[in-house]
Length: 77
Image 1: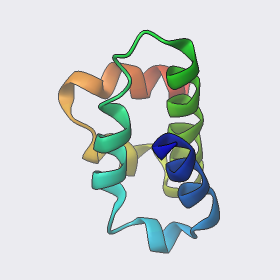
Image 2 (image 1 turned 90 degrees about the vertical axis):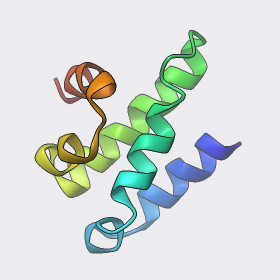
Image 3 (image 1 turned 30 degrees about the horizontal axis):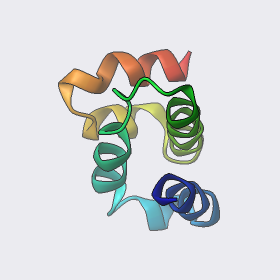
């Protein structure tokens, strides 16, 4: 349910409203990317895609921890 809420939150907010909580959102969502269930991974991928579209890849990559950067780069491609 939390990932669904994060998706709605990211979808409904404007890019300028996402700038301050961007690092919290990205790192909290990416924390679940290691879960092997495809259902969670697909939701996380959609949330990251929306964030990249709204805020730009460089902004998302800048706040991403090193261990998740490969996942974010694969989503961006």
